[in-house]
Length: 438
Image (cartoon, rainbow, N blue to C red; front, top):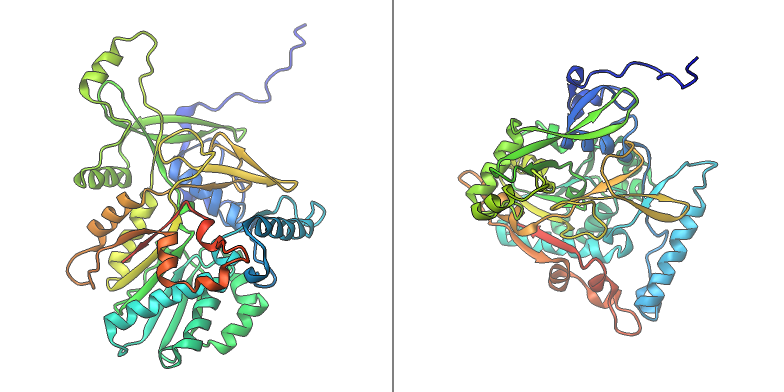
């Protein structure tokens, strides 16, 4: 008698897997199986599925209970120790008995409040006055507002320093996460500010499904947002240079496998065509003589390493062009990241466990338990934005790129974040952040 354990079931043929988008998967309360998904749909579902997505269940944005008094801190080293102590205190409040594997991360908005938000507010006010001469209303949209801290700081600044403009200010938050939208509404200091600042409206929906036409001049803020936009993935055929689109195969047990198919997705095709029109060439595409040489080498791989494409960022620009034709953009995020998975513009995939950050070597991880975030090629994104959003019918101000330090040196009150030693953590931390402004 054969005592080897028999398989639980016959494997489902891959060719019978249903093709799913993130929108399809959002209707389910459990991660999909026996499915084929584009890489962007798999990542989008992992992060944003309303039932099990990372931002729906696990994410927690760290915010010090009190503003940090930088003038009382000796130097950057003491600031790091102070920050670590605050982090341990927060994580100690969420042990596995009451909040399993809560994911905690920080942002410059939270660490350097209110001064970071004041710098953004000063930029907005300066640009508004230059554009409108104090005639029209100041309308601000924030995409993905986290805890609502930036909104609080911006409105406080305008109320204190520009009281006449404050009376003509409207602030609308577009927040995809119902959990974060609830936090923005229910957090005590936001509730208090909402009563004082009766110009605030919180709209729980995705910027990608926004269907309201906004003909007015307005500012769009997107801080630490696009790093969590899902990306597509392609690999190039070494022989021809042709791109193949990446897909994730999910078997009946919920295990993942990467596969490649001929390029046919319209969004990927449009991105690559637009990028080519800007004169950009992927560093993975070799010159013909190198491809010919590789083709005669034994055991040479037939595909390049992966390249991740910010196709959802392109969709954001399409939305801004179509729905907000007279907007001005303020966008900030990572331009480089350590410990990324293999590939060009590849993401960092990580989770926190028992107070430690655990990096992963692949994005093919259990949905909802891991943060997946990408760096951005800001110079390429600037050219893409100017190509898509510029044109007749909008206040055409070409976008420019600057480092976060350059932005803060222009707009921030740096004396308030300088330590006793003269060091300024707001300038020296987050050196891998850049701004895109238009």
